[in-house]
Length: 448
Image (cartoon, rainbow, N blue to C red; front, side, top):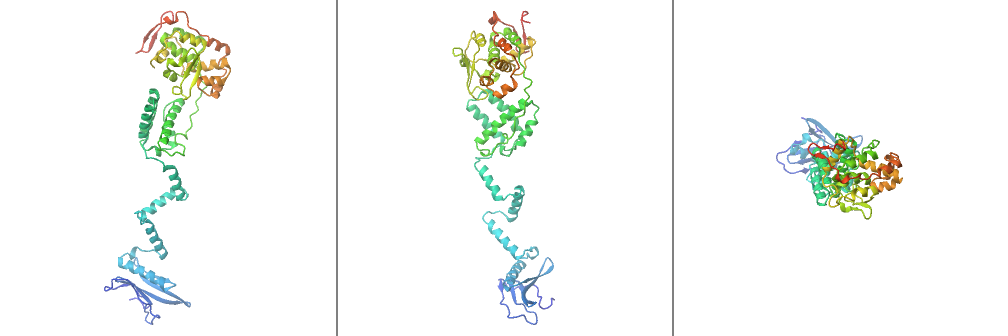
């Protein structure tokens, strides 16, 4: 039994409604409560206390097996807390409730704010704390505003594979060349295999790590990066990526390629190859050596673009690597090489002719460095015209590249010899044996 003046919370079986008893005018000598808070069968007495001339009101109850006494400066505050304790006793929840009055107000307000969302309070707090951690101290309203500005225009989330398929279909529909579509398909299929997730989730570090993991040369790596950049630009156009941000591919720079290994044929070597070539190989060799057209561009060239009357070759934007139209002058010796040829249809009838060209070089005991005809043309052309700007326009390159890598590789005298190479007597009767399966050219004894 508790001492008078410290009555504990009790229950009454005959009461089902909450009641706040009218306070007694003063505390009796036997410790009667000044008021009692009741809810159902639970009641909590409220006692009036004098402390140093000040009036206090106290409630006493048990929580988690321990007695707890709480003091208040006003009777109304004590009643409010007493009613809360009585409700918890009635509900059997007293053992799990440790909230202070202001904490309960915050709790009730939080529930009210979440009422329309249907999100449990615990789930909301977990999500909030995780978001604050990821935001690195930034206000969540600012982070969400940035997200809406960048990502709200997105039409939908798409996997990398889906975007690759759409890009290839679009390029084919737009009339892109077969070789270009094939290159995109080869590179981007490997890329999509490495990243099965959504394109929006890819970071520049992912793309860079993939490129570095490929066992390819620096030039090939740059070419593959270009294909990936085409993919990401297409994804941004289709609203799969934010329009106002750099894509993951755009953040990666090309690898620096060493161009100090530019190899050229001497005029004597070029004459040897041309004079041993049958008529069907002359277009590849002569146009490549005396106009500087890239092999990929030459494969797309039609004889209708070769205008002997005006003296130039027109390379349309759709045919050029740089996607810009080029006019290339026909030199006097180039005219001599192509004028006798039938000039209808494609200049290069089949890409297999390139294998025959390199096989011919091997038969003549000559190496065939990569892009040797183009490198040779640029080197001899700048030695002859002395203008990097002019050669850049003709070759479809930048003046800085021309000046940096091709200037002074050859002399003006060698350039005159190069652009003075002409067909030999009986040139158009030249033949040899070509085994396309073994890729071997067998020259006549006079040429061997």
